[in-house]
Length: 88
Image (cartoon, rainbow, N blue to C red):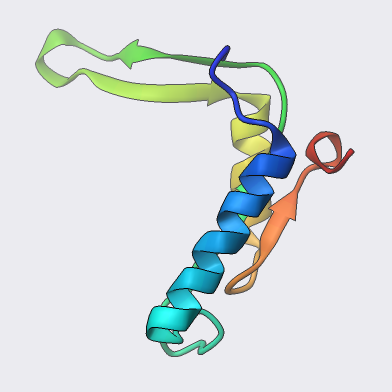
């Protein structure tokens, strides 16, 4: 993907989003409310429209997508997790 963001900027954006939600609603750290986490992964990915003509879907596939999904599945509320490549 040529339109990829820099990991540092992605982290800063997620952090600002969490702060804004907490200021307005105070729900990110309250486990009975909204559970929101972000994962950031870096690497080669493919994007495109896939599927039969009756049901076309836009999607993104690749290693960083799988790593991001694995990271966020284990994240707690209001956590921002990065893979090793993004952390560098």
